[in-house]
View (cartoon, rainbow, N blue to C red):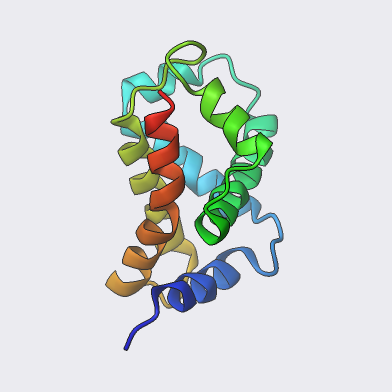
Amino acid sequence: MLNYDDVFSGSLKRVLGDGAYNPAFIADFYQTFLNASPFVAEKFADTDMSAQRTMLHDSLLMLIEFNRTRVPDARLQQLAQIHSRQQLDIPPQFYDVWLDSLVSAVGSHDPDFDEEVELAWRIALAPGICLMRFSY
């Protein structure tokens, strides 16, 4: 029987190594994400993209940890609040755009990418995305 946690962990290691920062992966994600919607591009118009790239890496690790523990740490709770209606006002439907862009970048950087790997990423990030949506 297929274990999606194992599939995800294998893909994550192929994409990021042992938690390392993969600049090409992050750059590909942002290229796809910013081109996916005028709303997204507008939200990032005045953003320091160097800092944002680091934030994406850190946020991804927070979402992965939340998938493992189901306990939102203070940083994840803060991230959810920052993206809420009261602050950055990121509507819940844009998490689909974010996830689709991320999966696209995974597909470009994981040589073993297939439908099972895609599903594993979507399953692994679903709890954190649910938290982000609920916090809106």
